[in-house]
Amino acid sequence: MSRKSDRAVSRRQFLLGAGMASAGSIALAGCTEQGGTPTDGESSLSGEFRMTGSSTVYPLAVEVVNQFENEHSNVNIPINRTGSGGGFSNHFCVGNSVINNASRPITEGEQQQCGENDVTPHEIKVASDAVTVIVNGDNDWVDCMTVDQLGQIWREGGAQNWSDVDPSWPDEPINRFGAATTSGTFDYFKETIVGEDTNHTSEYSATERDNEILAGVQRDQYAIGYFGFAYYADNQDVVKAVSIDNGDGCVEPSLENARSGEYQPLSRPLFTYVAEGALEREEVAEFCRFFVEQSTNQDLVADTVGYVPNTEDERERELQELNDTIESVQ
Image 1 (cartoon, rainbow, N blue to C red):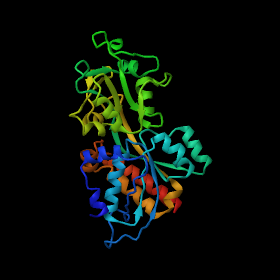
Image 2: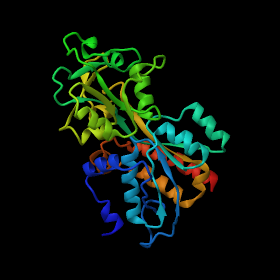
Image 3: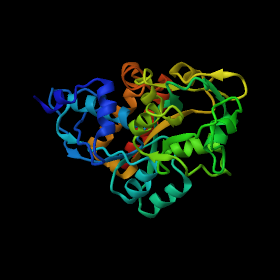
Image 4: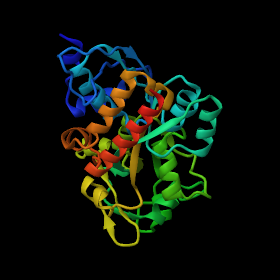
């Protein structure tokens, strides 16, 4: 069986398989001519470049690379899930990868580190997400939580038992599963739920692997966790999503509510960053164009992965800015 047909798996198989894979890179291949379609059935591009970063963006990036390689076969793109921050600090900003996926914007400190190593990041918005809070399927006391209640659970020195949040809830320990500190999801959740001036609790099971969060919550009636919507969307039969009350009533996490802006404060943009210097290479430039072009693909972004696609206006803006940068370096 061919390498490509080996990867023709369902989204559920992909998410579970990806979560169970080792931390080593998954080598993928792909390439495209400008505009995304080869002119003669055979790509003239070749080369290899590395992609690191966000576990949230990871399933989308893998799907894009798979489509990219279905058109061309001579460009290899190994992908590592390192977390947004881990990808920036350990790989992208020191020149060990040329693309870094991120579930939050690059920080000033990361930009400074990149600058010290002559790496200039170019930001590309590739989709939007709804960070999803999950509880065990047998949890019959929580369907909706306020931002303040979530803050009590996830801040340092906060609630220890469910009854500490609401006296009518069980007097049982809260068992937490969440993103590691190198994760952009951790950064975003801390900022929006815990608060910039308050520490996120360290009393939780932290991981870069969303399937481990899912498994932890699935096996524990008193557990709670959070991760990107895509990992919930394909596992709605084994865990329960918590609606969020941001002051205007309970709103469930969904692509529609994220798209409309009703799901607050946990709707967020997703990014990929490419080193401007690497855009001198045609294979890197064409892959980035392809990623932008696929960002409005409803079948891929929403139906296959589970994120909100870019609008046509967003795609055109991102493509124009990307092409301007490519022109300036080539």
